[in-house]
Length: 255
Ligand code: F6P
Image (cartoon, rainbow, N blue to C red; front, side, top):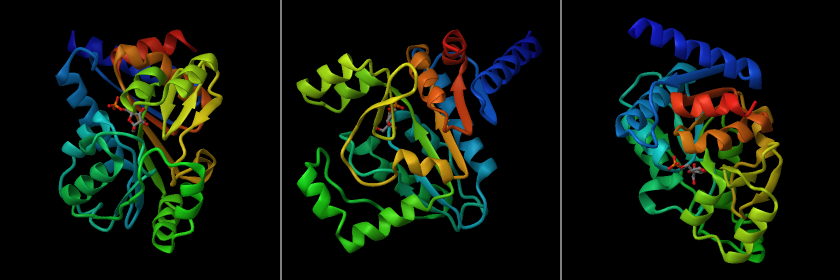
């Protein structure tokens, strides 16, 4: 039965890769919505994917969230990552400290023996503050490093779950609903077709930067996120997807 199951997951991986045109899909068994063990496995598989693609002295941009925190947990001292720089993909996105990209980047650096740079940018930036902040030479230096990364590892969330978690204001929440926002990644909200319907005002990686970034790795699982993951895949910038069985089955329903 174990072998049969492994074949089943391999089939799922191949079907998703083919249906959405991505290079590699890794599916771990189970549903991380209901199983802590599966969530940990997702983290382990995410860490393994990063190890596979990393090369010497890379800049690796990472996002926040509980899945990314699990990846950080599963990293260890590695000669291939010793020279790596870990940077947050974007500035503050309204996450609690333990789930912020800055925190994840610094933990990953400490675990692997790599280095890190942080983006000290407050959440909920207004347009004026944003404009003056991006002029700051020190911020500019980190932003340049972030945009020149070779690898991005990012989480994916359900749009409304993320809007609530970030305490997005009522007006924005209404407009997200009206626009049919389904998914969130890197501070961008996407509709069913994978179009961007909203972006959070902060510094760092822009969606258009993904085009020239060599390896974009999305890590997300759980049945409840399946449809969200499908819409980010439809946006079409992912190279590698690490997910779980429950999400994978949903993703295939939304091809
Ligand atoms: O806020 C950072 C982030 O990576 C989001 O872009 C994503 O939607 C979310 O976290 C995923 O969080 P979790 O892994 O906890 O579901």
